[in-house]
Length: 221
Image (cartoon, rainbow, N blue to C red; front, top):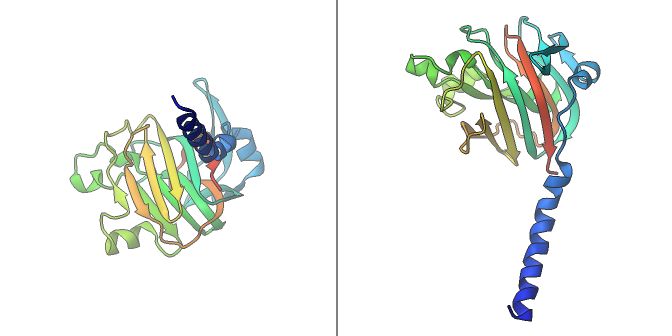
């Protein structure tokens, strides 16, 4: 290899290192369940730490209206990754993550409906993962006005009674959600709120409880 080619290779390696270093530097260990329960703000739910089956996790109890446990992390672009455990009970299991949280009632969220994962009814099957933007764009407004754009099936279908891995990637106005390590997103949308930063939280719907483990937040900005 000539000295000129060696120089080009060294420059390319240096540029690549600079490009990927911020992601590596911001990689985090999972947030401890005790930290979430102790320090984060709970809205319409009671949060507890549960240690069961060799796994320690946060449990949000069942209750009316949406529930949220959140912290003002000032999240802009990045990834939110965690394991969630719902239940195969019709209309009683809605759980996921909220981001760009401005207040208890203003946030974006991506969530799962485990009871629809393996539904034989094609309409229900297509409503397994959902994006919402509160308060202007709840799920019912999006379904009636933009059917099929902000909710999709999850393929391959997870076990609705098992732990499910969810990763939400936010880049500018784009939101992509990946389930159980799939290479392709189960849901990919353009966010509707116009918010570009805010807190991060665990979210459950009316009247759902939910279990959450191994939460990792990677901020890229």
